[in-house]
Image (cartoon, rainbow, N blue to C red):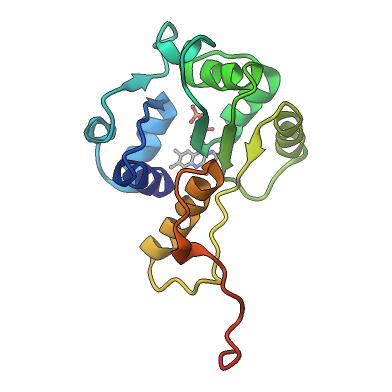
Length: 178
Ligand SMILES: Cc1cc2nc3c(=O)[nH]c(=O)nc-3n(C[C@H](O)[C@H](O)[C@H](O)COP(=O)(O)O)c2cc1C
């Protein structure tokens, strides 16, 4: 959830319009990992949907969204996307992205991975999704947890093509270091 929090903050800074869907499990994990209520998400976006709102705009291929990022994406949601079960608004919206051939980024976070997880990642990749594991980098030598998380979320933003923040570019090893 810290990844989600910083990702939304970055989108806000960039003035990228976005909407948010939160699942019931997501609300619990938000509260546990960020020690704040999920309702603060209303400060980030004008459109905050809950998973039961199956008739909301993201459920339709006619809605004008450019893409979707599921951050974090649980193994449960990954599995639902791989099977196409579309049992809630989040899963349906992801299914819509795939059928409309729009970008779908799945920031999965789990370790270790079992065969089912791996097969579901393969299925989603074959269907057009991008598996973007919540796997922080260390080559930029982060000196805080915030720096570690920010670098990772900026990689997603770079991947989406919104902004090329040159501070995250790898410049090569400095000869006088290491
Ligand atoms: C504190 C907490 C942390 C969790 N972390 C993960 C995780 O990192 N990866 C994962 O796949 N599931 C994790 N889970 C389990 C998911 O929340 C659970 O599978 C849930 O049913 C997923 O629902 P969702 O896909 O609607 O979020 C966690 C659960 C709790 C309570």
